[in-house]
Image 1 (cartoon, rainbow over the protein chains, first blue to last red):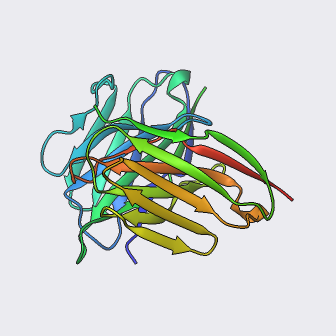
Image 2: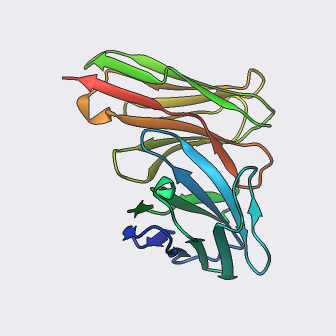
Length: 117
Length: 111
């Protein structure tokens, strides 16, 4: 079945550096993907909608210059956390809809743990 | 703005008991999702409910949707320890695959 893959699964970076997380749809094309952030023992918060070939749409309160999203192909969206700080440490999850006979099925990636030290 | 509220947020129950988790949402929608999340893992899709009156069952879990009341329930029958996890409901308001999550219900089933 359809799978959405994220890479890396976990990453540790130093404060002030940038880190990129990839989200790939492995056997379907996705013109839209979504990025969520989840802090420990909290819910998933929608950060932005990644749009293939155009700018991402950010949710209120999410800094677009800090969380750069690029959706350069129909199977890949990337999230770059720029100038990372310890408070950016979180679990980042992407999702992608796959078209089906009775509507889209939404698939979630395995998630990426980011720790900023 | 869409708000999705779950209750209870934490539930500790004995094996063999039945219980229901409630999910209320604030605006009209006919697309509701239930997910399970184990510690440190991503989401596992449990149910997708796409119409008023929809009811789906898988094993000891059953989900229903009442779009008029803006309410979904996740019912657990004869709970077993393996069902311990966090359960999220999520709503797609505009049919654009952008889903908003409730706060989650942490379910702890005591052996």
